Length: 130
Image 1 (cartoon, rainbow, N blue to C red):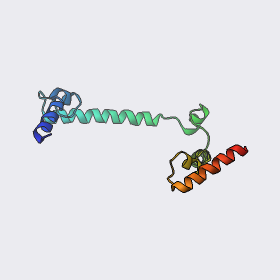
Image 2: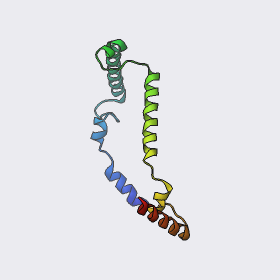
Image 3: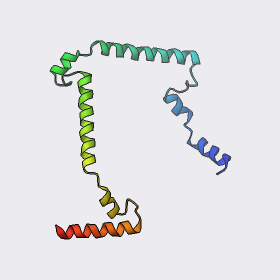
Image 4: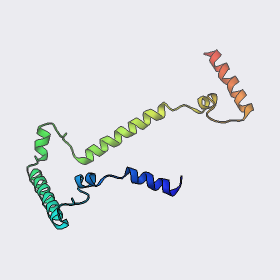
């Protein structure tokens, strides 16, 4: 694919001016850039004030625990619990992991032909004993 074709494809996929104005990326043609920037900074300040008010009214940790939104305990406790859960999961996966004999039997673990025939003979003799 030549550079011209790639460029043409990119130009076709480019957003229109109206989309860019709607997303606030570029100012509209009718207004001046300074007016647009002033309007944008005003909207940003309004959002900032709203977020500050919401954070000030945010409930305390004890209140969240009382309402059963948070569990009691510290971040350290949660870290230890997560680590223990991960260790349990790892131990479970390791216990279910196939052994080398099973891997050889399924042709996952490569071995020399003579060893494999001896191994298969040993497996069949074990199965007949059971």
